[in-house]
Image 1: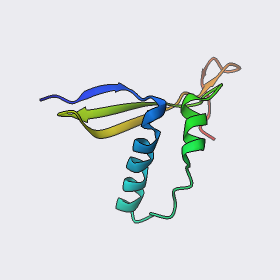
Image 2: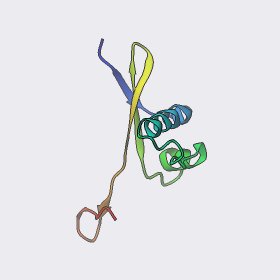
Image 3: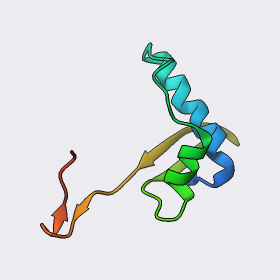
Length: 83
């Protein structure tokens, strides 16, 4: 069966943070995660949100996520610098 991919909703924030913490643990940096539910909610769903997320499920169970954001310079008319 193929994974199902859908936009994240505010109720997915605990799941997203779980995936982030699991990745940090895998990378041997479990204490490096400073993100909170409040910060993630503001970044993903608050007024002027700066990021978007997708949730992947396999057989009805969460399997992963993707978080992405845009950076565009109106002065340059193209994607802006990363710094």
